[in-house]
Length: 128
Image 1: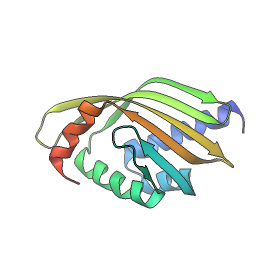
Image 2: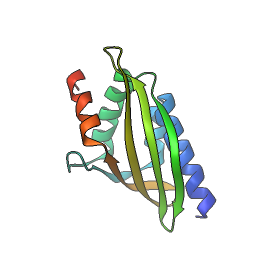
Image 3: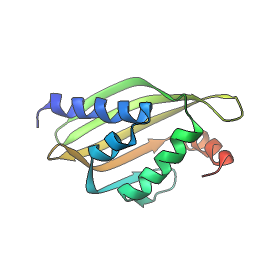
Image 4: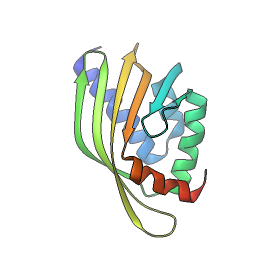
């Protein structure tokens, strides 16, 4: 894959999360992809991650990703962004985050997500 291919996949993937298109999100992952988050240190399967994504979409329906930086890597891409949304209680909320994705054969095989743990903890108040 070329650098542009990686960036195109990143745009498709993040755009699908923002729009709530879970079928496209799932299609961006290899079936055996692993997803890890710094705030809990747990490695998830695609199915586990999709359950969290369904909750996330319901909980933050107006989410927007403000791109700070996106770069192709030799084996994938990284994206730094600020996730902005309105919490279910009406509070405006924003969280800095960064994802590093490894890609093989056009799909994400590993996603490591680094979240502001104090900001992500606020979401626990709204259940899962």
